[in-house]
Every structure is written in C-alpha cells, then in structure tokens.
Image 1 (cartoon, rainbow, N blue to C red):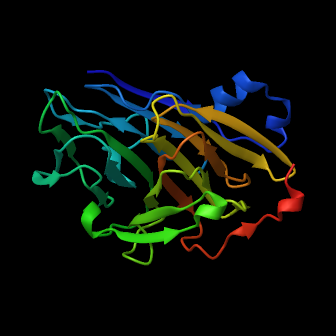
Image 2: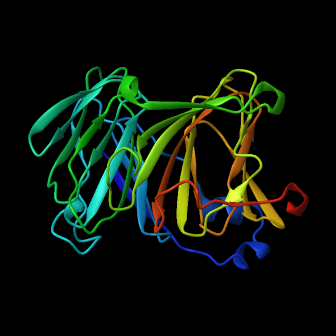
Image 3: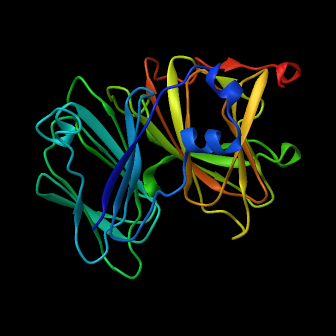
Length: 281
C-alpha cells in the first residue's frame, strides 16, 4: 500500500500571469487521484482543503494523518466527505460499518478517530473520492445514498449544458462547518458547465472530472481572472484546485461528470459574482 500526500501552495492572481503550461499544470492539476490499493492525497493551502483518492483492494485502507497536521488523529480538527465512483464497498466509522453502493456518499463529522474503507470485490474496487476541511464543531454523520440525493436538472440542449446536479453535502440539507460537496452529470450531447461563469471570493473549490462519455475525450477547465483566463486540459479522473478569485467553468469533447467540493466563509449559492460575457478574455 502506498500512502502519499503532496502539498500545493496558495497563489496570487499575479502569479499565474507568468506561468507556462507545464507550471500551470504543476501548481493546479492533480494528475493521479486513484491507484489500486493506495491512498493518494493533496493538501492545498487554499482554505487548507485535503482531497484525493482511496482505492482499497484486498485490504482495508485508513487515512492516518497526525504529525503532518499537528494533531493526534486525522479528524481531530477536521470534517470529511466522500463519494464513491467505483464498485461497491463499505466504510467503518469508529467501528460502525455501512455498505456503500456506487455513487453513494458520506459526511463524517469532526472527532471521528477511525475511518476505514473497504471494497466488496478487489477486481472491481470502490473508488472513494475524499475531501476534508478544517472544522470547529462536531456535526452528526450522514450517509448520503445516491438514490436519495436531491437531483436538480439544469441547462438546455440549445446551450449544450443540459445536466443534473446531485446535492450531497449542502447547507440546505444539514449543517456542516464549511464543507460542501456534490456530483454533476452532463447528458450525452452536452459539454458545457457553469457558463456564463462566475467567481465567489468567499469560498474556494476543487473539481474531479470523471466518467467521460468517450475514452479519448478531454475536458478543458478554465480558470484565472475573468479578464485573464487560463485553461488546463484534463484526462478522466484528474482534478484541479480552483482558488476563490478564479473563474471555474469547463467544456468537454464529450459529456462527462464531475465532483465539486467547496469550503470557505459562505455556504449558500446566492453569493456568486457573475461575469459578463463581454468581460471574458
């Protein structure tokens, strides 16, 4: 089993004015999220979010972070969410086990000492995409079954953005310290998400792009200041960190899905600062 956590630093908008393609990818792209039998995490200084993949095969896997965070155990001062985009599995939370179907999720509150991930079938392992943010209060754990998620159809075929947003961890459903998390699925023949674009300086975001409609498809993730945009090209199961000052929208060469996770001072969706299409550069 490999356990790896890399660090990515926070940046000023002026920094990326000088980045070439390789440096932009090095700073904001997480090119390897899932590896069979391993735990691969990224610690970003943007609101100190930790995110990555846990893929148990023949043995259960547990995230063990203490000295790296200056605490006694991983969730001593943190909350955690996950969504499973692989095969069926289970999670044990301080000894209490729950079965996890594909696309099921979970919210786990601050203070839980042991979170252990398992797969039902090592040849078709679960792929747990996990996100953790700092917390100040313990809120109850919640299993978030895909069949029970709030599905919000959005967009239309004319604008190539017909999609369904599935809310998992959301302030309108139950309280958290700051973590929000969901899963958006674009319908076949659709490629755009979040256009017209916006920013929200009160919270940052990460995106895991997955489940591409074509194996050779790619997604172009746009970021940067509205008048100085940049793009990163992603393959399936890659993720990007999006700072709070940056736009965040994407377009694919086929339909795709993505898991979004946010944290910061604001937990509502009405704080978006919309960008006029004429201001995009």
